[in-house]
Amino acid sequence: MSFLSLRSTKQSRCRQRNRARCGIASSADRHALLAASACPRDDTGNRPCRASLTLVCAARVIVLALIVATLAIVPTVAGTADGRDPESHFFNPNIGDLKADLADAREAGKKAILLMFEQEGCPGCIYMQRNVLNRPDVQAFYRRHFFNFTIDIHSAVPLRDFAGRESTEQGYARALGVKGTPTFAFYDLDGNEVLRMLGVIKEPAEFLLLGEFVASGAYKTRKFAEFKLQRKKGS
Image (cartoon, rainbow, N blue to C red):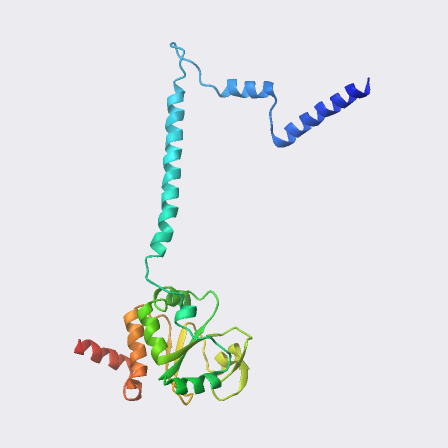
């Protein structure tokens, strides 16, 4: 066998191996598969199953179109809420020094400091950020009257508390006895806790009312439940 014949034979075997690896049928195999899958012809010479295949293809196209339409609608639905990112519009930058933040709050004429204790993956925290803290009216009110910070109850990030003691966010949360999230705690300008709320506040109006309860100083003379009841009667 000549060198060219040997090379041609090797190339042919190589092509056959590649077809086998990739599932590529030979020309004869493809004709056999087509013959086996072809619909039998009727007396007129037509293949009656072509209509069925056409209907199946049409159904698949319709389903695909519905899926695409649904995917196109989802972002629109998710974006219908008129919201802004709470990280930049509700919360203030956290420098890890609550004592310094307290001095800045006094200088800026704020009414109190709000700490939101949270943790990664907390459903209630996610709800608050997506449905309450993202609202421009809530952001405007809380930014006007308070400094607002987040504290991760599992974080090892260093933190100096209102008294100047060095700790971590996790250690500080434990020292305060914070066990569940979200927890909202308000502190007056002397660093004393004046109100703590555990759990989700689903209605933006109630969260605004909570802020007004603290900003107005009503917390000094009554409970929040009484304040809400009086407001309802007044309205």
